[in-house]
Length: 509
Ligand code: PMP
Image 1 (cartoon, protein in one colour):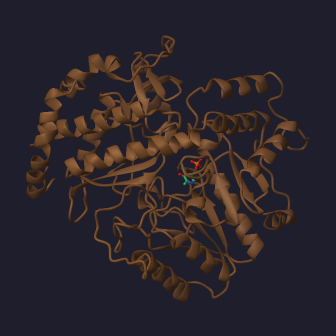
Image 2 (spheres, protein in one colour):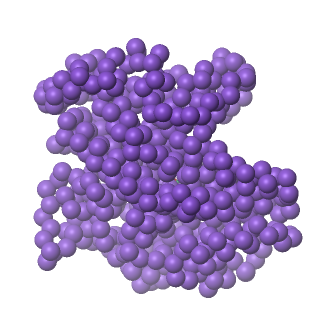
């Protein structure tokens, strides 16, 4: 429930919004009336989707209930039936067009059905689908050379797999056999996968099953979260937008919050880990599923030094943050100013094709030679052809720079909404990896209840914009669109969110 205080405050913040809304040409109607005009209000798109010819909506729902396992929960009260995609656009069975701000969960990196990637895949489909790696085929080799060229230092040895969980499974194995140690550290609020091995790394109760032994050798340490955590100030984050928490830092002290969180990490090393004998620490460069959480500047670099001093490796999970998404850099870890020992990647690497990879140094990779280790599809010719083409498109279309420019513009637009609406507690991120956290109380940062967040989120969908949702309490909008979006799209998304929040207050006051 919204506290009375916050509703009063919200009403205060609402007034200028309502005035502005009355003169705005965008979404001047209530959300229920917006639907028929959806197409005319969206930014232009010259692509025409083919007519939907599949099973009826009702039939699809029926099959779903009867034959699909219940862990697969579709978004929205009335789930969308999407049958076609083009760049940043998705089309439903009734021909409605949606601006996709979630990219199939941070996966469609260069655009739905990007013509160049399509051509590369079609060409490969007509040439060779699969041999597995008992024979050599050219594509995996061309791709290994191209991909490792994007990584710094000695990170030149790659093993291809098919999903992020597989990549992290393999990284765990490599770290353990290379170091001879067992213990692995991850952050509370981290998400690293759903295989039984990686579910232990994932530290969100919503994503954990009661399985014996999954935490074997895994320590979850305090999340250095400058917005929700014990410490954090207005200069902690590597982002154009900071929290509105007070900051005690001076040029002499450096980031005080970062140091306090680091002390907590040291405590775990002191009390809970075998001295000098850890296997690894994993970290997403910016937490994704956990709600786009960034760490205080400098923390990760120091953490990596501590892990290495204790015999372990640092593993950067770039499943969401890689491939230019954070704008300034190609890899998220570069924003932390260090080079990890192992990098795992998935999602955006294949623009939606099942493809993932683990990259490490030849020295560390040598541990894998101790026994046979095999993955039937890893580096398959089709996947490799897609991977090469995705790298080409990111370069040719300057998508990393687009992430920086459009992402920064987007973040600033969202930060203006935080000034207007008390229920937006935080706006954060880098490039096109953005989070908007809803709160019921701006001061205590209490999460806005899930039904309220869902109401706003569903209204955005009705108005033509698909956002993701995340965070332990489901109160963070996740904005991670295909990197081809424009400033016009970003502005439309910000305006839509403002209108959806206004609609929410109209209904709930
Ligand atoms: N690591 C991170 C950071 C992720 O976000 C995810 C998926 N959400 C994974 C690993 C697991 O990837 P997959 O679903 O492909 O197994």
